[in-house]
Image (cartoon, rainbow, N blue to C red; front, side):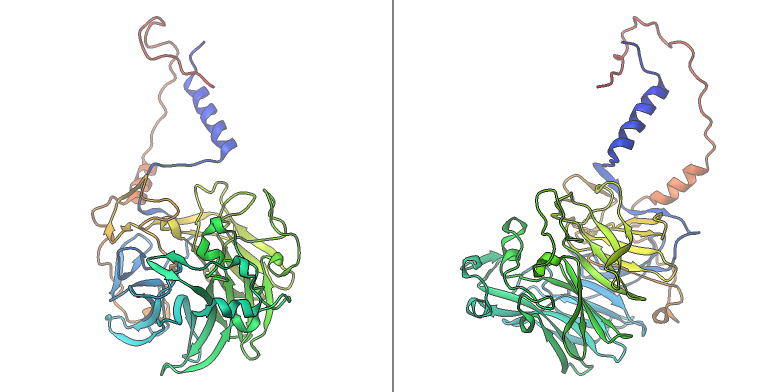
Length: 474
């Protein structure tokens, strides 16, 4: 067989990847991988690494440390900056009666200097704060919680007894009943001024939650039983006085009237309430999203949601989708051609920036990126804080469904964000000082004018030389 030329080999490799759309790396760098300053929104990014770390970091677009808050708790998944410059942060308690994924225990407001100025704890045998919260314009705080319901309570509500286990051991704790979502609004004094409970809206109607709708056991037995609806979003929509909620297990988001408590809109999975075609073998049916997180209100009757795409019959892949709630149609969507580039099995978030770009948190690999409306990635970042320590590369074994550098949600803030006014935003040094700055090396390398070598017109060695065997295509 004749030896292949260099051009033929390149053509063959390009052809293969064009067909497979694949990218894999056994070892990959952390930190900033790409930064297109001309197209990025810029600003500062707030991250709270989930594993082995009790610190939240504010970094600039080049991965430099601007500020940090050292706290007494691992993050209760998320943190956000308030317009007054304080940090509103979930608190994950070590001792919890509920250990379903996302269970945390409370919320703290921390000033720029690290002082706790407000807190609300919800961690008792019968209720626990989980996942998220939202500061309302009137100063009140929406808090998402789980409340305990017994097996007898569930049967009385209509749950099929055959689908109820006696107990489940999860996260080091035995569970003997259901943990059901509710939302509590508290004022600055910690007094409850409003509540909404899934338990008050159980039924099979279009504005109710079917207590017998459940995930299959392979997803995780506790999710198919005790963790019934598994919300992960509670956001206040001031212009409409609505509460935006999101259910991972039902694969839907909801709008609830703040005055009446009635569900006025739902989208994502009509089979959850007996409508449309349910998913089946390699067929998504009428279900639009799978295992979704972080629904956000965009205005103009648009909702954005992070679609994890996990356990999706037509193939696992994550996406960010924008939905027009007037038509129920997806009007914008971002996904990559291969899930190797963008896929978060669980968790994840997406933030619409004022210039139209989207800041994405792909949780499981600690991967953050910014994408333009025309779907060009203009900033790409991998969290280097791995299990509480800096790691310059992630290697095989560091990540499976989740890595020790996971970030549940991150937020981007403009340089003129009110909460940053008058603050020291000077660079304190790289967040990962011992690691090479990959994007800088890449940019500098791109400036080098490398001339192509002259073509080889004859073999460098005789054909019968004992050199390497000819490359073969299979």
